Length: 192
Image (tube, rainbow, N blue to C red):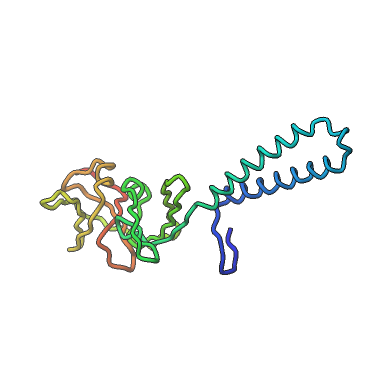
């Protein structure tokens, strides 16, 4: 969900539901407190139990709200290996995620940094792609490339390993349709 004002906040549907449930619990508990206060003290048999339950709910609510508030969301552009945020900060994208998701240089990513330090990436704006068929080669330092149409693109070793590629294999890659790129995503490898 996103507010339209300057202090907008991005939250996922699951976080929205959590916040909604927290607020419902607070509302219900306040109703119980009002009911208790409206009763004569001698009629409130379970007064201590009710207050203990409310106190536990409030502590859990406080913890849940703290977790929601500590989450950071950053957007940026994938450069073939890293995500470059709008402020120039670089964040390493796990090679297995980039390979599995077939990320292409220029894709827009969202990074959520969880309160416990976990990084979660999500592709939110794929760049328009085109397929190119080429041949798998390597340089003297064992970096993999795909050569096609007198051009050469770097590819992630994780992709080559996943498809069990060997030098000389035919490789189907994805590259930006209307932009020059150094990196390509491996869509498939055809064994020679």
